[in-house]
Image (cartoon, rainbow, N blue to C red):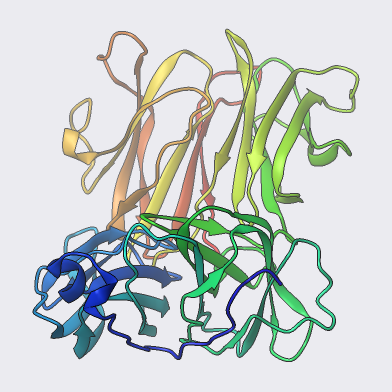
Length: 459
């Protein structure tokens, strides 16, 4: 093993470095706090320390940078940590509170909130703050999986057989390994049920070169996949999500082509079928592909010798994608777009996909009453300027009953909106995740236009 230390620091261990470590007075007396959002059905969260916002709009499976609370005192501070969120209507949700927590100067704290909005668990881990910039490599593991019990975590050179290898650390839920020194280089992280070599997470090869302090936080996988865990990786001011390479990424096809008819979508050197004979306006089932760069090939159905489109894009482990393909005046298009189909308990989430190749821009409105003007009230607009082949961002709305309006306008004119279809009533519920697929009557007939509502709520 190339890591340098096997010293284990207990959860919530607090060590105050001596003044001889150097740095300013602020470096010695301040404490630093990071937030990690792992609530599987939670909206963006805010973390307050002594009622003052420290981190706002923290997204799911994101870790923030380390920040100094405004409320900090001297070398110690007794402060209340509060996790809160807001409904689309602006109402406050108090997720969890840790009262009167004692923070010490020159220490870095990580506040993790996991579980569900109805049953959250929040815990804090800590490490002594090192003089910045850090020289060398350091790594900490944190167990934030509510569903899994004790875990052995292995940090090895890539490809090493785990039989006979001693675990780097063994953790139960809410425990951390402490920040330990490693030799920078390439590693593989694997997680097993404690006392076994039954792997429940495999990171694949990770580049851990360079001077850095890193955290790897294991959280439950809320996606529609067989993988048990995801891993949030932090370094400096950034965090990224790593999935289990064993399960790869999941890709499905969407055909919005009005020229070629049914399409086959293939991927990789083995030409794995993403979709076969996919009709216009049809959305295929998810197919697992290996993580990494994938070469996509689009052909007419059952005609592998005729290439309509070739595209290379990256599929990341643990993520889901929709491969949208169709014909445009400039030729065949293909877009591999990442999906976010997670359910958020307090929100109704909506996105739209524009599948009508008429050169018009689409706008989408939600209103509580039937619109009497065209276009509907500007404030009711949830998706604007959606072009052919495009997928909108997710709109998070207040649950309720609404009129859904979809309008068109000429691409360059920027005015003169007209209803694509007559407004109709939709019921939006908390936890809903809805895709609005806007298509023609068929590949050969434009009208009547169709709006297909696809319920993508993960069960």
